[in-house]
Amino acid sequence: MKTILIIDDSRLIREMLKGILEPAGYNLIEAENGKEGIVQARRHRPDLIITDIVMPQMDGITVSRTLTRTPETAGIPIVILTVRASTADIKAGLEAGAVDYITKPFTDTELLARVNSALRIKEFTDQIKSLKRRFKELISTDDLTGLKNAAYFWDYLNRVINKSTKQGGPLSLIIIDLDNFKTVNDSFGHMYGDEVLKQTAQTLRKSLGKKGLIARYGGEEFVVVLTNTDEDRAFIVAEGMRRDLGEREFSRDDKTFSISISCGVATVVFGSHDKGYEPISLFERADRALYAAKTKGKGMSMIAPLSDDESSL
Image (tube, rainbow, N blue to C red; front, side):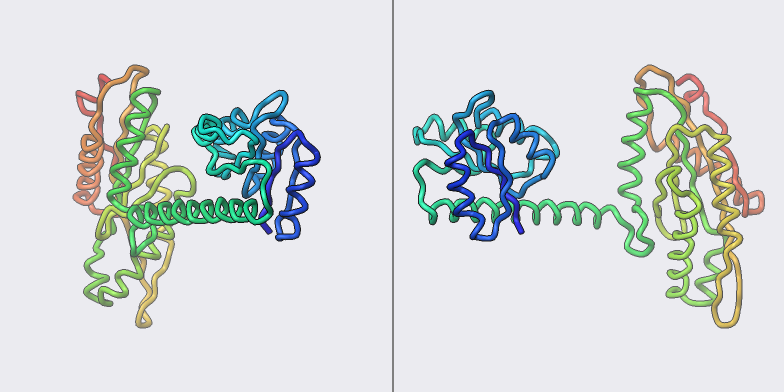
């Protein structure tokens, strides 16, 4: 059942609106002035608000402007009631955020038609917002693992670096690569290899918890971004993920095996001043640390030293 908030200082008008809208299946909430109306709107989040323009304490234009500028009520459609059908009044109401207006006196048919129209607009708007959120989620998600993808990772890394350069503090990046993953594909096929990647992603995400962002960079490579995390703590996170994955067993064709990973850790510590820093610099250092871990025998985590440029940040 849709809920409608009526804001009007006239009890007669409120009763008249209730007499039309309640039989039509709407749940009604009442407020006798603008200030109370704002409180009721924030408390109940109605599907629609009908407000008079002329009221004591706070008029309907101010009410509409306040509600449309408040995040929790901004999406609620507002219909204004007025006895003054001048272009200026209507224009003021619509500019304040109202989606429609009704002039007094009104008929039952007109009221219901405008209410239904405003609610349909809200439904369409909500659907569009939902589709936009879903589309944004789809284009930022890796199809295979459900983790964020490389495009999202680069956007996120750029944003947190910009934030860190202003606020100061450490920022760490871990690049993770599965060791000898080609053997899994060669032995069991690419379809099972994909299943191993899915389960690996689940294990790494669970191990990381809420400490940072994890994304699949591509192939058998993953990346982790840790804000406000120095290299010692980042190394501990990397080792924890490496240990947790190493303890997981995979089974196929009566064969049981485990997967090891190598991790490259890089950290940059920003000062309190704003200074530009390229995300690729942090990535390249972590990648070099990963290469060092692979070269030294795999199944380990390595920390990249600070460069001369970074030591002066």
